[in-house]
Length: 157
Image (tube, rainbow, N blue to C red; front, side, top):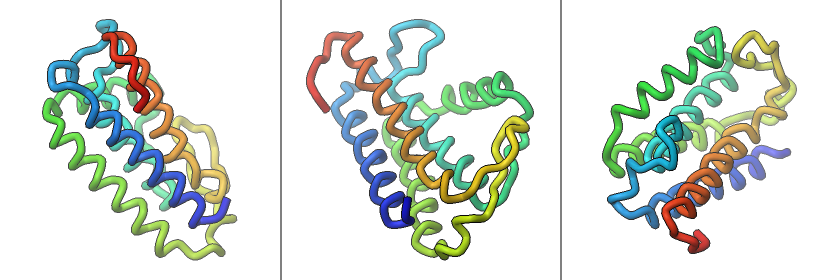
């Protein structure tokens, strides 16, 4: 994966997330199909927050939370504090723009550098990690699509 390709796929995933959120009615922003499921708004906040954490790892910063369970609790706590579409989008824009700026300045020679993975999973080459923000964002966009079908919206976003 080249840096320009990673950037293009990432921007497409963020656009997809924004498009789905735009088609989510206000009365469904904080709705979820089950008590433990994320709401559409929480999906966006989670994706944005994760972009920031993945980006930090790519810059060499190890994610400090030791377990997935603790990380999930931290994510859920943050997600519960954002209840407005505008605030979720602002966070998504901030994290996405920082990552894209970094990609624009990233020298190709760095792609072979090893970067830390979370939860004591070791390290991975930066080139492999380039797609993680896009993949993760697309996964949450797909979850938002599914949530919409749960409340009866079967349109293709």
